[in-house]
Length: 71
Image 1: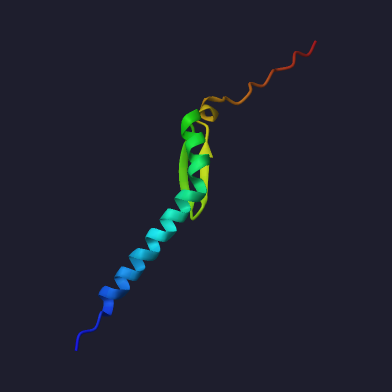
Image 2: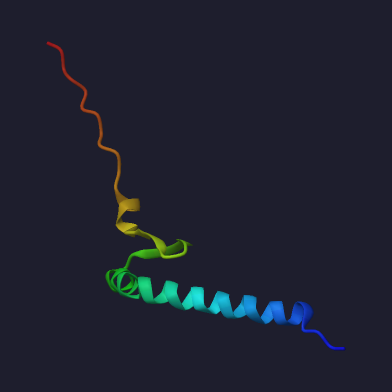
């Protein structure tokens, strides 16, 4: 008698993972393309969620404190 065992479960698991990856891609394809087009970095943080960052924020400096002159 032959049973599928873990081989069958492995196939089902990989099929579900492919469906999830496909759905994630379809949900986020437009915002990702926009972000890449304007030069942002994109980090996947979970299903259907991304973190978009404009690298120009790294170039900002803290404003200098102006010392007040007391006369």
